[in-house]
Image (cartoon, rainbow, N blue to C red; front, side, top):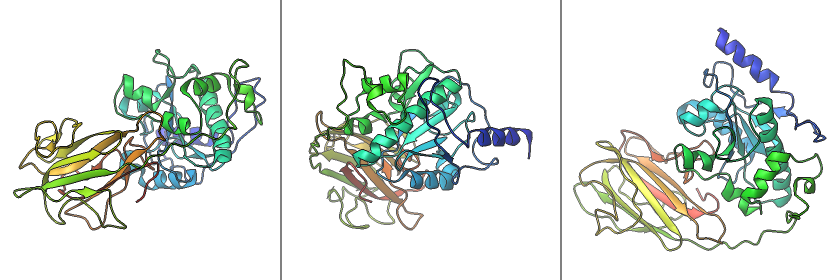
Length: 376
């Protein structure tokens, strides 16, 4: 074992047993599950600068254990993993080693974050309560451990940062964890207060200022509206194919022609808004498109006629006041049997797949669904 890997192993073992909340918070030890932790020879061997702790949400309604298993299995092939996933009623699963770069939020964030934490998503309010307390206290204790301010999303370049902050100040188009927190009644201000002050073990209300009584136990009114998405691909060298609305069961209901190349795409929704772009073998990533109109090849279509699409990326914005929903999508290439992994529009679904496709392999099928969970 070389020196870097030995140091990495020591750091991992040190983080195994528990995390503690700041002094005076009557902390309760929480064991860290290491069943899905990367070995000393896996993951990045690069140390981090200790400037930020990154707060994520998974964007997929799946158990935290499943997310940890997925990251452990695909850390190299997907190029994505974090140090911790919180969920399943307040449990913590470790994947990456603290103090070593994870691959969760782009090169700047990865290089400056000794700890990145994913919050697994659940519809169960009681389970969320336990998850949230553990999530907040792990973010806070990690910041204190590495001498990082416990302020959330301040203008300073050090502190606890959401993935949205990274998007707004560095790079990307991710918005987590705020959409998910809001679905359970947690505002940005509330989240910032809780991380700043911590949550005493067994007491949620202690984290809320007296002037702002907690509404935590009140169920969040769901205002989920059905969103239909219509999309079509243009077959290279031929014509526009018939549009597809949403998708059917299994592999049915897709845009494209199997074993064919495509060069243009349009997408439109009947509620909210969607932006999208394509990657072509000839040009790389092309600009974002905000309209869906096959007759407007300048502003309403993604792609260049005659240039082969091998990747697609999209982002859905939910109308204000409605239940947070996303674009879930997947593709297949001419060179592989079966669909590639499902993607969520904020790039953090069970392994942070941020776009559909495979570089260099013509995309021949595409499926899209707008929902608050994946239908694939």
